[in-house]
Amino acid sequence: MPPGLHRWQARADIKASTPTLPGGLHAWSANATLEGGATTLALHELRLDSELIELSAGGALNPDANLDLHARANLRKTAGQPFAAFLESTVRGAVDRESLSFQGQLAVNATRIAGLPPIAADLLGDSGRLLADFALSPKHLWIREAKLQARTRASMSGELDPDAGLLAATF
Image (cartoon, rainbow, N blue to C red; front, top):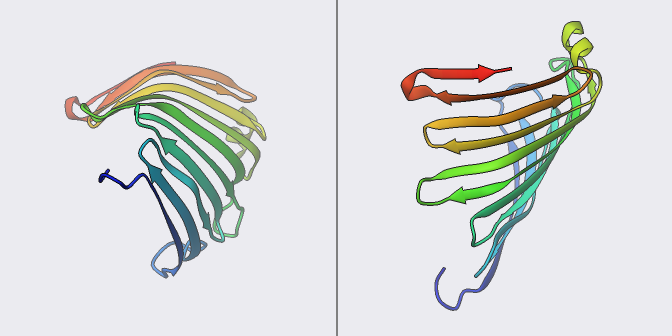
């Protein structure tokens, strides 16, 4: 950060029409507020509204490289999109700037789930929660533990290393 620049704020409002995107996403709007200072970089709100999805997100990265993100998404049922749900999620963890890696936790709560194929609806029900403890590097993903808490309960751990052609998982 340049000396003397302790606080700054940037705002953006975007409206777009992109006919090449799938129906329901071709017209959307977004607005974001990004704020920084000598200590923390924060995204107060990012919003995306379209026929298919209403999304809001925000988060912060502090000088100790701790990351805290949150998002809410309302997936809307349309003629071309039979699935609908309301999702709330958080990601918290620490970034290692030297190795460009991240260790953290993910929590996703889903409610008002509708439109799933019958077998998936029988397994999940109309709400559920996914919790995961994971690590990510530019070439590797480790899932120490992931738990699905819905009508069906499951847990898993595993790793993915595309360069080595490795995908290993235990359920």
